[in-house]
Length: 313
Figure 1 (cartoon, rainbow, N blue to C red):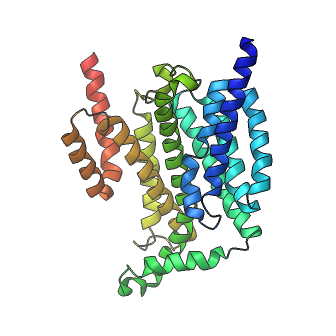
Figure 2 (cartoon, rainbow, N blue to C red; figure 1 turned 60 degrees about the vertical axis):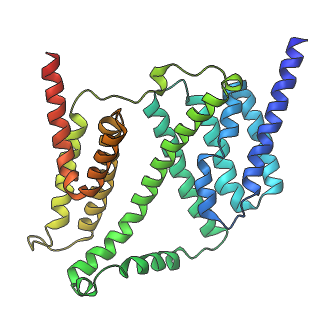
């Protein structure tokens, strides 16, 4: 009797969550790609909730049913670009959350979100015949409007900036996927606190607390790579070497790594500060002095780690 009641509850919960999942994809028109992409931090949640509540095996059945229903109700581009990836991300969330360390879960989410971004581009290119070249040129034109005309008259700078804009496309995809990975993890934590009766007890702190790095290896490695990439980027402007595409690629990598390290430093040094006013001041300084901080922050972090190590001794 208890088993039948339990199965009935699981089926009811699955039906409700599946309905929510499908509705989330129906209410946003397929043409609103930006909104659909942003909603990827939410649309996977019904699947993860069911997985944490009823187990992965039952979730696979739910996902198969969800895939069949979505195939009937959604357009092919929405199904392939958003619905199926959301089902897979939701299953991954149920498998990883509460069983793997926080950083591992975020990396899994980020990689899957990146794959979703690439899949979305491919689907809209092959199925919808979207002219991404025209869209790219339009975006570049908006950026060019903000740059002084005399700068663009310099052939070296014009070539460098044109190549840099191309290299920034994959960098933006990576940054966007990383941001969605972090937000996806935070959304699961928030929902779990509200729905602990359904999703079960919250995981141990070691699976949700921020990953701590005791050594300065990350900062040293970042400082070395950032310095090399910056040197490669500026050498042509110093007329030491002729300009090549690799200089723009190195500049894009330097920008990407700089933003990632900025968030890393913020998460371990600024966000952990208990005083709200101090956090705001430090956050403003991080952004306002961004070009300097690309090289100053790792040096500051290495010195802080040395002081902490000497104090322990």
